[in-house]
Length: 257
Image 1 (cartoon, one colour):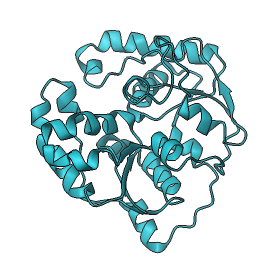
Image 2: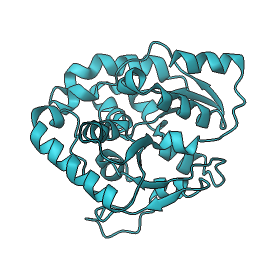
Image 3: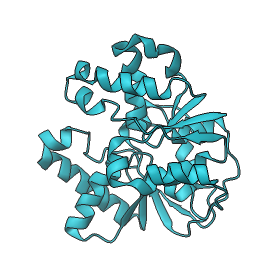
């Protein structure tokens, strides 16, 4: 199985440890390649109402990933952008859309993982990002009367030592919203502060999510206010203490991320 590793630009720039954890996880399932010429997927332009300005970014995405069996990235929001806007803005992408997956989807739905070999002895609350929950249906939304399983909860429960903490408002937005946090910073920070209060009062040591952008927003507030809680991407928990069997070639891709 040939897997293309899609790393969003902000993860590449600010959180390379998330990219490395994602690579470690995916190497269990096939041959993983990180295309060095990949760039931003174009989501910031679409979020700002300028989606046509992101077409060139989608062209680069297509050129880098069109030949893989699967394309997997550790960001529900970026993957959702490609799936919802890709074929519409750049029709040639349509045949590849169905093989582009968020990391949670790929491990849970495609590989149907049941026995993750990982250990993380901490109290963890899962932040259900809006794109992941309401866009990709990774779990059940409180406003919908369904019985959708929380895929991220199921995966985290496979990790030895984790105590899964349930906040009072499990699927409330953190206030990031991409460019919303830039255009409406006061509201964005207030929403983030409310979320953090809920997580802290619930007893969590860590907040995890499949979207590092949400965690980046929350961590900014944590650092400024010196709050007693930390953030960590889902990939880092699922890959914790997993024994690596990387080859020299695979290590080169890790260092290139």
